[in-house]
Length: 229
Image 1 (spheres, rainbow, N blue to C red):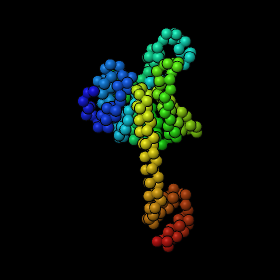
Image 2 (image 1 turned 60 degrees about the vertical axis):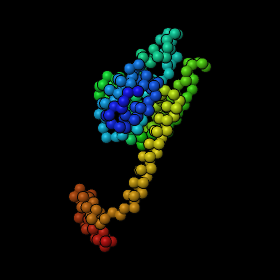
Image 3 (image 1 turned 120 degrees about the horizontal axis):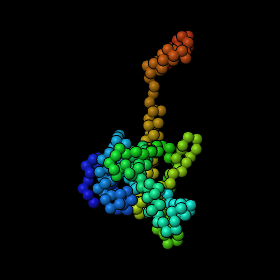
């Protein structure tokens, strides 16, 4: 494997954790050099957050109709090539990004969609055989997330070994848990911090200026605050 990129330590280390199968899924035999070059522009997409983990993913397994349309002898690789195939999952501090691999490989500005970690309700990993009893295994990462008023499931086929899938899923769960613990701690600290009389007076003054309170109501509330102090 090539020397470290020297772009940002977190991206370097995340790429080093990609196994050979994950690199191959992103760019074939020249994956290492191409992806490393493309990753130089990843901070443009995620400028203020540390990258915790990367995973190469491809499209979901082909449906029966897709297999028929491609022909009985069409390989999964051919079908994925037609679909557009590989993408890069980027786990950042507060977001899970799905980035088009083509942009990374061409050195273009990365394009992707993100899911806030605070909206993710469940993470599941599954390895099972595909394309018949003796076919290769697929390693699936299922993520339930809140979208509007419903909970939707996104499924990614992670390239590489079963360990790669498990490690990425564990990193994702660990980061979600860390964010939840930080939010709870900040909530407790906020509730324990007394609000000063000056802050309350400023709020009352703002309400008066906006017409929410009448002059008489403002005077009454102000008197109560000053008595409490």
